[in-house]
Length: 484
Image (cartoon, rainbow, N blue to C red; front, top):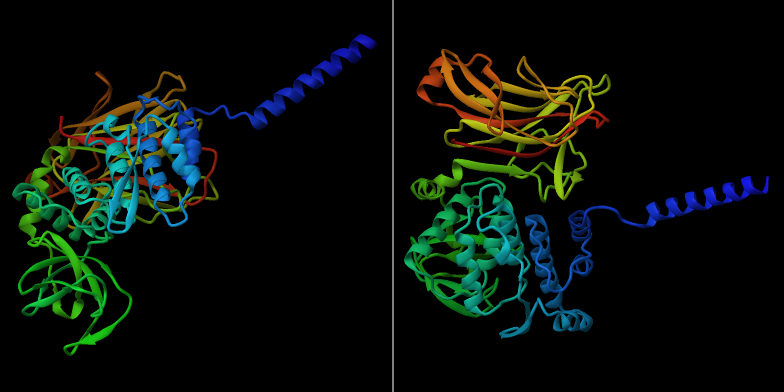
């Protein structure tokens, strides 16, 4: 009797220890912890997950650490900056603290040891660079602005247009050293492209000067110092607008801070002397030509996606959902239909250029019924036409009505659909896992044969959405497309 009570007590104690351990010990991967801490703005806690001299190999961790350094640099230069934070970085060996003397006092700069380890031109590198520029809140030395500007204009903004335009506008508001003819042309191409892209800060913000010897000022208002003059038909890209209105020389308008490419500087100008003009299509075409190689290899992931907002570069009727983190990556959950959620919507991403493969990475599902999680559309005559629908259940993957039984292992899959030939009004495709063909001769739904022959179509990637979340879901991590 006594022995049984002892065992019972020990069992209860063991259960209590297990419950307490699971309640208070975080067993998640370190990069998942770092991501959540960054999202909650606990930046010092992010750094404390890593040894002072550690440079992790993960692109995601390097991106988060670089962004963390940028956010902490911003805090250092706020009016209420903490002396404890300054002391922290003076003691931390891998992140050297530098003091720059500027026109607005001392600027504390933290040397970032992580950015240089990120893959150049990769998504992580671009996100880290955009964050670094976007967090600048007061002038830094001209040579540093120039350095960041030269890094930024070498990057392809597509897929990050909105955040890229905000960072570029922020950078151009500061004085910088003159840049060369080629770099100036690259900058002009990026500005025209962003002005030609909806929902960016620069959309509809190109203007030509109207008038002779129009004053440029250091701030919004005639009381601010004159910093130059400009005459028609000089071009400008407007970066921000003062809320106040006034009348000057019979013109009603606002004061705008604009960048003047020929002057290579920004200044404030009264909008009554500006006339909006459209982006130059020839310069936009030069931009697209410059990044043609990138255009043939497009990668879509969901890092940085806020579940309450539509993923970047997609359009359509978005239904909010919570993102899911698995091994440091963000998955986009696509739910199966239920009796309560028959109504579906979809969001799509337009693609440019020829494409002949679509690679997609996803996690398995336990659903008995196939869940449609990826659709490939052709767009012609200003309408979308479904070509291939890809679905998944717990045993199989389906492409249209073609089925392949998976091996049953609950692992992340990476498959690709190769568009191989055309037969009349249908495409022929095949499904692959690495170098192994899984399904051959997958015919698309019927298309307009004349549109296919003439090439007057473009591809779209669409994600079907149901209104209500449920247990039956497919997690989509990444899509790649291009030319093999």
